[in-house]
Amino acid sequence: KAPNSLSFSLQAKMSRPVQARRLEGIDKNIWVEFVKLAATYSKVNLGQGFPDFPAPGFLTEAFTRALGGGNHMLHQYTRAFGHPPLVKVLAQFFEKLLGRDLDPMTNVMVTVGAYQALFCCFQALVDEGDEVIIIEPFFDCYEPMVKMAGGTPVFVPLRPNPPKDGKLMSSADWQLDPAELASKFSERTKAIVLNSPNNPLGKVFSRGELGLIAELCVKHDVLCISDEVYEWLVYDGKQHIRIASLQGMWDRTVIVGSAGKTFSATGWKVGWVVGPNRLLQHLRTVHQNSVYHCATIAQEAVAQGFQRELMLYGKPESYFVQLPKELQQKRDWLVQSLDGVGMKPIVPEGTYFLVADISQFKSDVPDVPNSDEPYDYRFAKWMVKNKGLAAIPLSAFYSEGHKNNYTNFIRFCFAKEEATLKAANDILQKWKQEKTSS
Ligand code: PMP
Image (tube, rainbow, N blue to C red):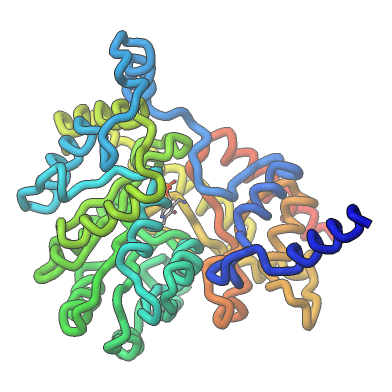
């Protein structure tokens, strides 16, 4: 008898939901699915955003020095809110960029990548019932992170205005409708998430666009979570403008950054937030009660990377000057490849992503009416399985309600070796030939 009654009581306990209610509806994750597909099928992976070229030598050498250079304390905990050499040099760097004095101990916090920086922002600043405006298309984690904090995401799309002269579309042709944006602000709005340069489009917001957002933030007393992880990756002489430098914005903005993107070392997972202490003190509360501490050696190496960049600031030898130059060339190669086969690229002004229109390839992957899966998901899955080329469906960067308006595009990452981009070009050319001969 005893074992039976024991199994009955165990079963009864197991029928209760084990998960917290805040996880409802946020269990799906595009990366889990597409990273696995790429690992299984891809010959050329232009999906997830990471470089396949090495991080710069000065950075990896700094890491090796930190690891074996005799300072055994670098193998121990460091300061919870950021290794002192790193917060000091980040403060110096951002003083230059923002034109204001910064206190390394209160205006800078180091995180486990920009991802954890974002998590701290939403947990610390968004309350039950607060609304958070998210500009679409958006880096997908903003939505579940807002929901986990108890907030309600409110979406506003960048609207495409195709050029009339037959030229290729640019990410600059995707714009906010000022009246529509203004209509999303209300007394419930706590924050807006801005991501410039924007993943996935590569849009670099202009001073006018940022001015409009800033004006609305000030008018409605709204905070700005400014995800600037691609701050150094801007092309064609464009300038990245920091919204925190606009009038009235410093006190209400947290800037999110990533050494992964800045130094082509995404696996190190070193990120940061820069902002006023009145906001950062609350991010520190989340940080000290969750992650608490980030890897010391990686922080030491990133600190040395920034010290080098501070010395070479604006000079041709600076990595922040060289990297965008190299990436602009890679962007142009991929633009040419895609345009050559009729997969119309939207030329990005920044980031290492490029969105392309797959309309002309639809005959190869017919639509399934009434399917739950957006067409671009099916297209991207078909492409990796049948052509060996991995990309990410654009509708993954839209909310549920708006996904179906953007199912004719896929996103490629061009932070890749020349040989990888050439291999992608070969696949596309062969595909085009098969199409024309069939
Ligand atoms: N924000 C954006 C816009 C991103 O694209 C990414 C990475 N893909 C992140 C944040 C996260 O950066 P990290 O790898 O430093 O966590």
